[in-house]
Image (cartoon, rainbow, N blue to C red; front, top):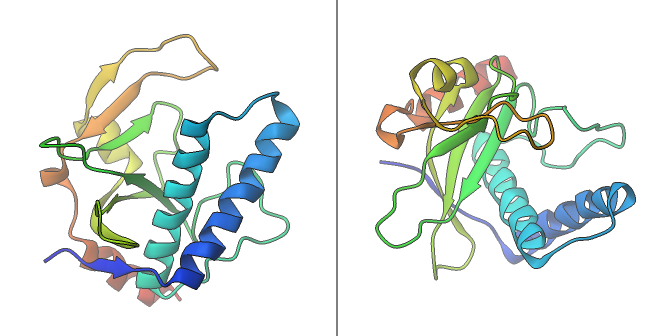
Length: 168
């Protein structure tokens, strides 16, 4: 059974603060923020907070955090999605993502408050080796194509939890 994490109102609020901090960095480099970008940042930050809570890790970003650092200690990246209709969420990576990090797929439960399901995880190299390239290099921003992995190929979330707890 996949773990379902319920964020409290306070935890959700803290994740929103983190998302808005990131957006401020974005505004410093670019001249715009659209609503989709804002919503995606909040969704992603809440997914990270849910995984951190489940793994018993701190979700507070260090002051010296920089772009390129993992979302969570020591090497965890969180990819959060919302299911749409009958479409199953997929773990999607850009070709320039780090192949040695662990990527966790999280879905937000629609119409259920702050509930997030941890679908599973995979190493980046597993996605690149076994995944399907569905968007070749678009030439935008130095991206190197996108790859997705069917959720049925993800590792059990409990394996990740056990390994992280051993590393602490």
